[in-house]
Amino acid sequence: MIVVTELTKRYGPTPALDRLSFEVHPGVVTGFLGPNGAGKSTALRIILGLHRPTSGEALIGNRRYDRIRRPMREVGAVLDADAAHPGRTAFHHLACLARSNGIGMARVTAVLEQVGLASVAHKRVGGFSLGMRQRLGIAGALLGDPAVVLLDEPVNGLDAAGIRWIRSTLRSLAAEGRTVLLSSHLMSEMALTVDHVLIIGRGRLLEETSMAEMRDRFERDVLVRSPRADELAPILTGLGASVTATEDGALVAVGVDAPTIGDAAAAASIPIHGLTPRSAPLEDVYLEMTSEAAEYRAAAERVAQP
Ligand SMILES: Nc1ncnc2c1ncn2[C@@H]1O[C@H](COP(=O)(O)OP(=O)(O)OP(=O)(O)O)[C@@H](O)[C@H]1O
Image 1 (cartoon, rainbow, N blue to C red):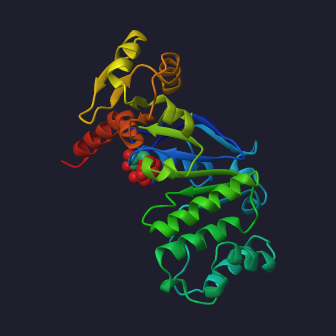
Image 2 (tube, helix red, strand yellow; image 1 turned 180 degrees about the vertical axis):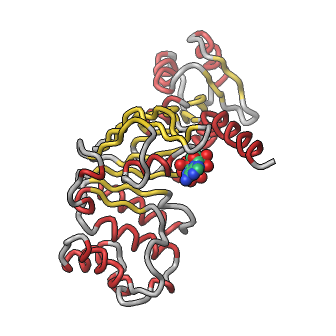
Image 3 (cartoon, rainbow, N blue to C red; image 1 turned 90 degrees about the vertical axis):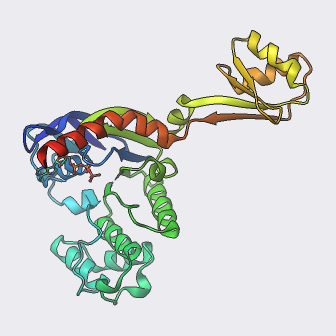
């Protein structure tokens, strides 16, 4: 579990993190989402003891990172897919990491197998694709069999197969009871990958919710198809819905949910051929939530670079 409390980080006059607090729980995949410059990398770096906060604290399993005696055994992280030296082989890279952290060579073979790189274990990293380098980064993070896994933008630049692989890997890590946190600036990348989402902007927590709740909350309307739509429309209006008809004769109801529409139609013996709750695209919702933060950051950058 990760507990971040009132974390503030100042590099200059504008705080990169502004009293940011959140918790990341084991057993679910949590997304850390925010526009460029929101403070995601800064927060991850503080959690990993790479930066000192101006104030506040970040704890992993009740301890600050620098108090953990064998960090790789407690937390695995991928901050940069290109952390491995291109001249080394995948095996050599992981073996060096294992040796310097007191981890046995059996784990090197095991993680290479786990991430699907066993067949290229003795090839140089310089010849690896981005997807392979991401897999190698994840192998490194898993070397110490840690309870907490942190990944900064793991999906960035990957093809569909790579994204699918990351998704299923993160799901199984969470299913094993680990705490999994990954960052992204795109809701579209997160929507299918994470169970829970923390949305930040300008270094502050804007929203914390489950993906399911996020979808429910932004349910927009219900598309209703019925051969007796003209009879159904006034019934729905009577329930307080605002109803419009589409060109092909369907009804679009706002302000009433699908089960209520189904029950009302059944009570009036009106057949229903289709009942589709429709949500605002999550990407739009997210952009709206973070637009102020993104605009603010863009304006600050314009001032900084006239
Ligand atoms: N070492 C640093 N020195 C000065 N300013 C920094 C430093 N690191 C980050 N910042 C600033 O802090 C803010 C937050 O940056 P950060 O990289 O944490 O955001 P991010 O959410 O990870 O963004 P991105 O998606 O672009 O990686 C930005 O305004 C950035 O310019």
